[in-house]
Length: 252
Image (cartoon, rainbow, N blue to C red):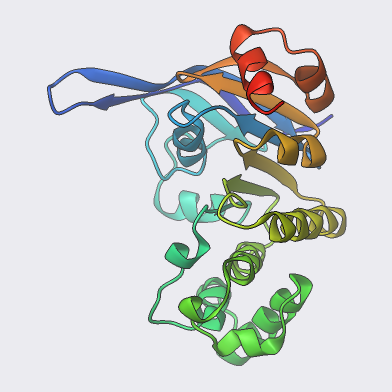
């Protein structure tokens, strides 16, 4: 399988108020193939979100390297970073917070298209098409984030991420704030979008049932380290590490 994302020895240290150093991510290495869905699981504080934020360059890595389509993006800035965001987007846990509350959903979706040189009218037409692809009608273009449900807002957030046609979508607990019915709908949407657009997903999650239903492979993180990695079925059915076994036991 061709590699889309490769992470090598990624580490992130934070300084505490007392002047000590806290290592949130500790020497993490893995790869993600084209058209693959990989989960990153672990309890709160395991380093999952910090890892995602380093990959998307929202947080600077202390050491290690990140490669996207074999391009080293670890220290990318400015124009180079903008080009990277043409290939990679992130969908956050709280979709309402990821939109500007003073602007309509259509403005948020069309913005990246306009920034790339598309005329406003064309950008709004494309935003309407993207919303439709994500199961929302044209009326959602003119609604504000607080005027729609959590599931609808997350669909709009996915539509916004799709606007620049990324190859990699990183979903950081993107379904955890939704009820089970809406979670299932969002995962179904992501499955169909992957088939249509040939994308890869890095799925940051703590819900093993969702991971088992959605992902091809998974890595398990504890205290900033990867303690287990394999196909989803392998890890869930035959966990090897004591921490993984504890996670499995906690949901049985």
